[in-house]
Image (cartoon, rainbow, N blue to C red):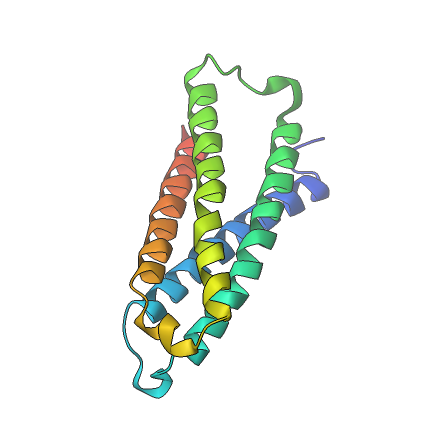
Length: 152
């Protein structure tokens, strides 16, 4: 498959859009949970936004995995070995993405646990903003690694 093949272009586009959804959503939820909102003193709205983001996050992680494999498949036989500098950067990126997915489980579980409690607890939570901040930081590391791969 050529890198300019329409399917290959769609796969790359979907990969970038998935990452944008992950990063943009994490930034939004972090911003909303890190400060009190006068119109949402009890936390209902912020809790609902966090709940929806968790669904988007896990769907986007699935898209990232599928399109990542598709992107690697587009390279075919020309994919550099893991022993090369590029291959090492790819390995590091894949490990950071795996860490992002694994470390996102506690965040999702925290939001799920707060769904069964009064929304005011979500509004007072100090843990949730920290979990979203960590998500943002890890996603930014993935983005930097991806740019380094694309231009390195």
